[in-house]
Amino acid sequence: MANGWTDERQRTMINFLVYCPKGIIFLKSVDASPIIKNSEALSKIFDEIVLLVGPNKQFITDNDDATYKAAGKRVAENYETFYWTACAAHCIDLMLEDIAKAHLFPVNASTIETARKITKFIYNHLSVLNLMRREYTNGRELIQPAITRFATNFISLQCLFKYKKELRQMFTSTAWVESNASSTPVGIEITEIILNYTFWKDVEHILNVSEASVVVLRLADSEENLQWVMCTRQWTEQKRTTSYTGRLSIAGGKINFTVHYTLQHSI
Image (cartoon, rainbow, N blue to C red; front, side):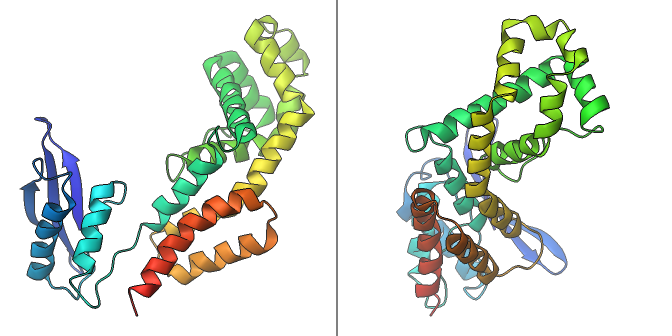
């Protein structure tokens, strides 16, 4: 396993680790600062590690850097049974990122930003937060830890939509109306949003598009020994039951690249 990191002197280091039944063993560390943007030079270092450990082993690297990807493909070309494939979780995370991009889907981006405004307002006002926890969500939160960075948007939307009825009740309750926060400009705006039918329809629309992807993301990021076929089966089911062709064309392009590359280079 190749794990890239930056030390206190701003050097780009790569730690090489070996995972075996007895645990993880440190192999070596390399200062890759001079070559971190050079895929050919980086691939030579990777190749040395593969030869040292054995080309019949699995080699795992970071996935979010173009140089790592290019270097991985170069190494794969040197071995008949060795192939490069993208991280499934990272691939799906990029799909979720696209769904939330303003220049692609402005309504989605606007709705997600509005949802953030609601949660920010509630969590920035202790009296409102305590009211919600005590009377409407039974102590449960609107903000939940997400699997990945972009999944956070959709997990938050799921939580909001789950408590749609309770939030609408809270923002029309006597306790809210009599609170100091309700008469502020932001409080008035949040109340209007919560009671806005269109906002909730937009939230529901985004969840219909993204829900299956979040489910697959959880599978792909699971600690269990899951095979790609499970992910692709989930994805196929989503394509069969969803009519949002614009979203699927973006998402399909990313997942098809990953799956097809893997299959072509493993035959």
